[in-house]
Length: 330
Image 1 (spheres, helix red, strand yellow):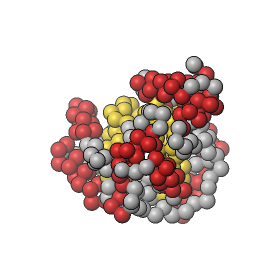
Image 2 (image 1 turned 90 degrees about the vertical axis):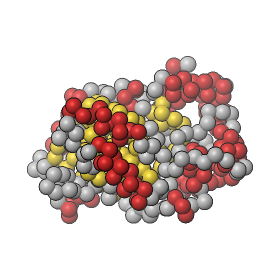
Image 3 (image 1 turned 135 degrees about the vertical axis):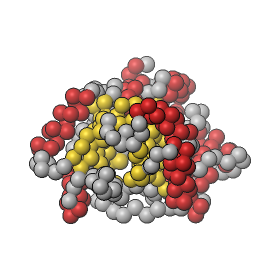
Image 4 (image 1 turned 60 degrees about the vertical axis):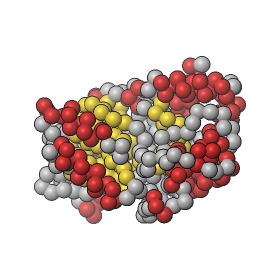
């Protein structure tokens, strides 16, 4: 059973089978029954090791999203964090070690709705929100190796860079399907049939449309979405850089190939308060492992002369998949 758990956590974070009985396919590879696979996945979700079995959508490919930061007095932090987390559009909400100490990600159906959410948070909290939308992604995946060793992303060779075209939620025929799968597939023998029954599609159409969203890079990966803290990666830091504009693409693509860099992306500066334009996430088993990774990459990539800052996470107030649109009753 432990070997099956390790393999479910480690080997199926992507490339989930698009077949009528996907859990039976996993069971065949694991040498057990589909009922055992479903029971173990349900247990991993209950234990908090797995968030869901489902899609990770490409940021800003559909709808609109942004990272945002707030500077909140310590005695107000929990109350303001609760206000932020109340919004269904907020999927991640963290305290970090910095004057800007509350960081969250908000996702909405379009830019207008996203602005309304940020404005509502400002009104209710009484504190300004600094939006930091994605400019360019160099590596956004956050897959983890579970079989020991330092944090590792699954991809070391970068694909060719290409512009990301936004798909409006109101213009895609898959809005109901996206809403039905955004928080995970149902843990049943035939999950795609169950999804289709909810939204009025047959099983094969659901499978074909999910496959089409993968080909169109709307869905970045489909599989077991793990919670890194529960798997031993208890330290993480956001490493931010003030990169000369003419070098940001070069350095961003280089940093994205470093094993311990789990996320890497460009975001806008907000002078004078926020001079940084390149963001990396570093995950490790402990704080020293993260700091060692940072020291090594600065030395190996000759980045000593580039201004940077390190923002360790303190508390996680909210973490879940993005909600692009509430699922309608059918």
